[in-house]
Each structure stands twice: as C-alpha cells, then as structure tokens.
Amino acid sequence: MVAGETRGACGSGGDAPRLTPIARRHAWYDPALMPDIARRAAVTLFVAAIVIVCARSAGAQTSSAPRPDARFAFSAIGLASWQPGDDRLVPAGIDRSLSGIAGGFGGSFDMALIPKTSAIVEITTARLTKTMSVVGLSINDQVRVSSRDTVLSFLAGRNVSPGAHTVRLVVGLSKVFGTPSVAGVPMSTPSSKSFALTVGADAGAPIGRRLELLGVFRFLQARRNSSAAEIGLGRNVIRIGVAVRWHFDN
Image 1 (tube, rainbow, N blue to C red):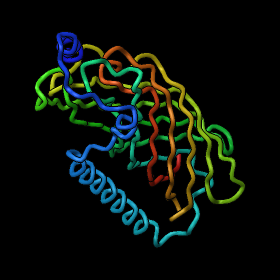
Image 2 (tube, rainbow, N blue to C red; image 1 turned 180 degrees about the vertical axis):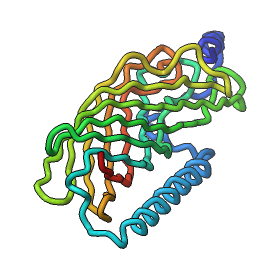
Image 3 (spheres, rainbow, N blue to C red; image 1 turned 45 degrees about the horizontal axis):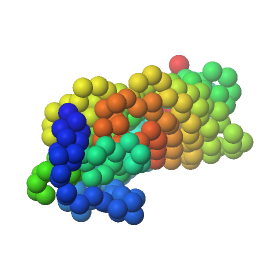
Image 4 (tube, rainbow, N blue to C red; image 1 turned 45 degrees about the vertical axis):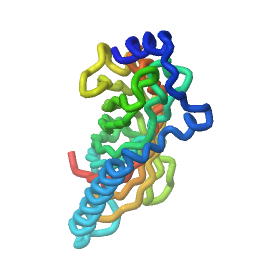
C-alpha cells in the first residue's frame, strides 16, 4: 500500500520535513478538516436535540418515572468517538498517526435478567477521516485516510443507584468491524481482529413514564491488524454520547 511505497521514497533520499514529536502530539488538529468536523458535530447535536425534544413530548402526558415492571428497553444514541493515535506505529511514509474526534450514532437493546441487572446488545459506529502528507514525495502529495470503527458489544450492566435515577456500570466484549481506506481504496486487512474488553457507564434520569435521558461512556482496547499499524491507528477507542432509552413491557 501507500506505506510500503513511501518507505522506498524516503530511503532514496527524500528530505521532506517530518513533524517533530511536539507537533505529532497535537496532530489531531487539522485545520483543513475543521469544517467537516464542525459540520458533523453540528448534525450529531441537532439529531440528539430532536430526539430529546420528541422524547419529552412523548412523555409529557405521562408520569415521571419509568415503569418498574418493564423487562425490555431500546436506546437511540448520538455520540462523539475519540480515537487516539499511536506514534510508535507510524511508518516512515506518512507524517502523522490517524487520530482525532468523529461524530457517530448507535443503538442498544436491554433485557432485564434479575433486579438491577441486565444484558445489553449495543452497536455504535463512527468514521474518522484525516488528510495526511506523504513524506519523501512532492510536498503537495497528500492522501485522505479514513477509518470507520463499527463496534458490536455484548455487555452486562448493573444499576448501582438506589433511587429513580440510573447509574449503571457495564462490562463485556466487543467486536470491532471496519477496513481503513487510503485515497478511497480499502486496505488489505480489517483494522481489528478478535474481541476487545469493553467497560463503561450510563447515567440517566426519567423524562417520562417509559423514557430516560442518559449520558453514555464506553472504553475499549481493540486488537489492531497490520493495516491499522500502517496508518498509526491506536488501540484505544473512547466514546461519549447522549441516549434516549424507551422501556416497554414483555
């Protein structure tokens, strides 16, 4: 791929400037991509606001606490995904690791097992895109690198709050799907392999007889493949979002 070609270019005497360690530490900030990031963040916040308004409207004529006998729940999630890079993986051919913040969305299905304990199936997705300079070629040679991580999680949750408000701790396994692309061309292998340990928490408050407004946090460490190493994609995936959970009867 691009990384293999650019190593040769660097070895043949290319002297294009490389980022210093300090510059790399702040390489998530790419002014050329700020309009795209701002637009995606605005769309994510707009969708989350619409969901919250609709949820409040739906619950306005009902009591203020979710049904205690509801065994199942569905959540719609709007999120921001932070993907730290790993400079140790950056090959000689590119000037920075793929890292930054991207907007995303997802959903989850909950089933109560015993009081305060539930099984959760959750799927979230976010796409990170950066423009990178190819070191060793012309200074104007840049490529667009992107990676979409779609995370399918199987979690167990335990509500540790004694009142009507929810504070739920979750732990489980996740499978990360997605293949990075360089200049629109998919790489040879997916970005991750096997399952990853996932931990997180939900904190929420009732906004209707069947509805809750939640803050969602997830952290996982993906087992990355060689394609991720070629673009400096780090193992850690951090996702923070807002969700509306609907409780319904069995």
